[in-house]
Image (cartoon, rainbow, N blue to C red; front, top):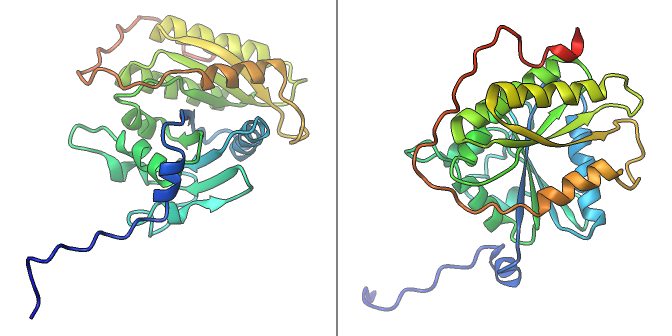
Length: 267
């Protein structure tokens, strides 16, 4: 006869439990990258950042969660760790399109997505989270971050980058941004683009564009980063992502203007 009062057996440990214990207490950084469908080399940007961080000795998880990225595996809802692919000894990859919305709570916050990723890959010191601005606004609704806008040296990409900054500023009061331009160093418009986007962010949003760097799509993947990219990464890794006040974020005051944002660099 079965003894219903016998102590139950402990549930088996999941495959990431040992890693969680091993890396408990290690500081981890989430680096949000705002996806941009007008940038043809977003994948190159992700690869280059992962390679640079890996070369610094950091364990990296690339979470590719934009709407144009590969869909999440059907097992992701049951075992997220099992869906993570090993790229190298220090870099792992998770296809995750549409996955962030599975973690949205009743207040529209998807901060649990970050927690789930950190549980699934506890060894990862840096999470490169590539996602659409709408999803990032849900994920970072209660968490500090400096989103990295991705652009190129043509108008549509910069208009989209500005729209992403506007959405993040309005929805969760994230008011500082960095910019990564997938463009050759010899491009004659790079400086004007960065200045134009910084001016629009300040004038229309009250936001600040702090660092701008280039990723040359045709450059040597193994080359050391230039000073601007090294500075951007160092500043991102030093950020504190402590949870923010959970109260409703105030919307920045609108500023009237007849000028079209992010257009001045292309006249």
